[in-house]
Length: 123
Image (cartoon, rainbow, N blue to C red; front, side, top):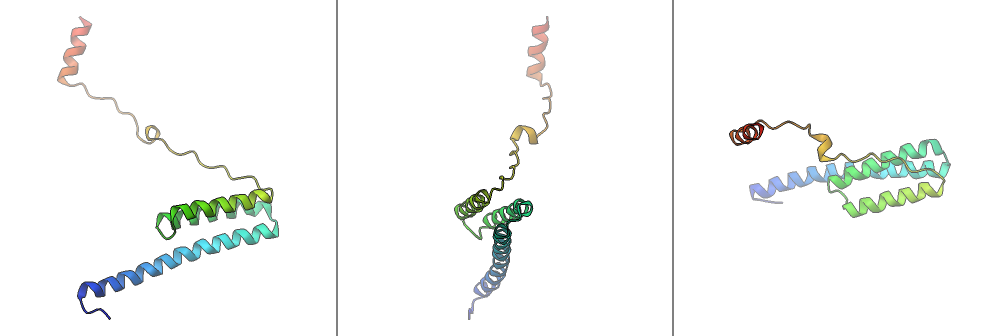
């Protein structure tokens, strides 16, 4: 048992993190199990939906550093190959946003230097 105050706090913080990580890991495993169960049953309509949910939970776990990003990629690849072997078409991925599409373009205000340049060109 820790004696120093900071060590006591670390025990509490670690216990909280352990609980959060377990919950995230459990949700990921349940999503993958639901996907494989549906895959075995052969319900093609539900397979794509559950595959998307499994991808989402895997991504969340990787984002929270519960699992490594390479493991997340490996799991997603494995699920995709399983779905493909059953004849399910891959879900369409969303197009990533580009920087230009997220920020609206704003015209620059004329400065003293720009005003002089434009006025001299017009004459």
